[in-house]
Image (cartoon, rainbow, N blue to C red; front, top):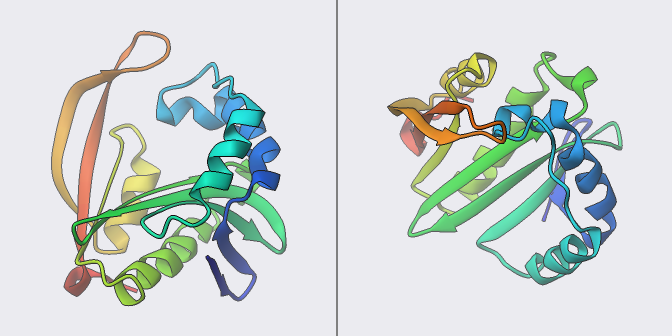
Length: 173
């Protein structure tokens, strides 16, 4: 998969991206919002094998985000029964809070609604991640529920999350 808009590219992650992904995932600052403030220790060989197996899967994609030909983050989507679950992480902090997240999500959401014919897109985020919530709501996502103390992070602290959904007719480009 390869989507391009201006200087933004969303493309399928390949085994060549495994080192970059492992570096991001091992960085506690990058992974804290996902519940891993100490980072994740990921086996690069296993990740390369996983990415190789995933490359022909049309219903699950791990994606790389590039801005001006530089890898700055990752995304994913999983499609099942007409619903796509998505995730996004801009891992290079110098690209955060500059509007790139909204632009990148617009590209992926348009692709899923128009090319993959999904009826609904769902996602969740940490309740404390108000910056992400603002972006999702600006694009038309609606809060479905808040799950209080629904999971425990790497440090054993209870975390809450918020579930969102977006139907094609509610999508604001």
